[in-house]
Structure formats: structure tokens, C-alpha cells
Length: 133
Image 1 (cartoon, rainbow, N blue to C red):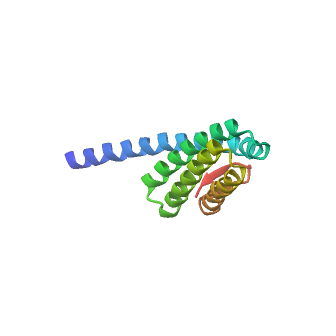
Image 2: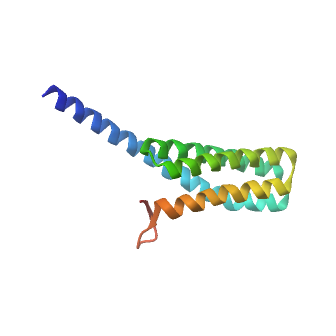
Image 3: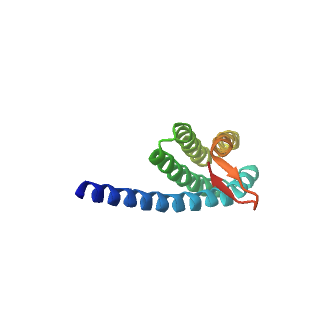
């Protein structure tokens, strides 16, 4: 009986943990969506202080994404998150160096990781919202 109770407590705790991380993940994805457009415009305008700020936000987004997918053991999404995080760091470095070409390349790599993960793990619902596959 104790074993069943312990397993039930663990299961409920894990469910709560995933629910909390799911909310954190969704919030992070919304932040990414709000950051990507202005970040791309900042790169085009050569506004490197804004690029640096956007890159830092994207580093946080990819770190949250990596944590979320690691807890679920989703290998491809974990790798996309790591690759996106590396691209965001490269974008930070490009902003510091005021290198527009490197910033464009890093932004493109980050966007590609988002696209791959969304295609594999996101489903658009009839009401226009999304859910994780």
C-alpha cells in the first residue's frame, strides 16, 4: 500500500512539474515570436545594441526549450534547442563585433531550428491555436 501511495505522489508531482514547465515553455515561445520580427529588423538596420538585447532573449528562449524537451526525452527537439542556443550566442557575438553578415547568418540558423522543431512537434488546431504533438 505504501508503494502505491509513493508512486501516486511521484506521478502527481511529475504531472505538476510538467504542467509548470509547459506553461514556462509556452510563455517562452510567445516571447520568441514577439522577439524574432523586431530582431530581424534590427539586424537589417544595423542597430547592434537592439540585436544584442534580442539575442540575449533568444538565448533564454532556447535554454527554456532545451530544458522542456530534455525532460521529455525528445532527442531531435533537444538538438534543435542546443543548435538554436548556439546560433543565439553567435548572434550576440556578431552584435558585439557589429558584423551584419555574421548576424544575418546566425539569425538564419536560429530561425531554421525553430522551423524544424515546429514542423515536427507543433500542430495547428482548427481555432488557429497550436498544441505540442
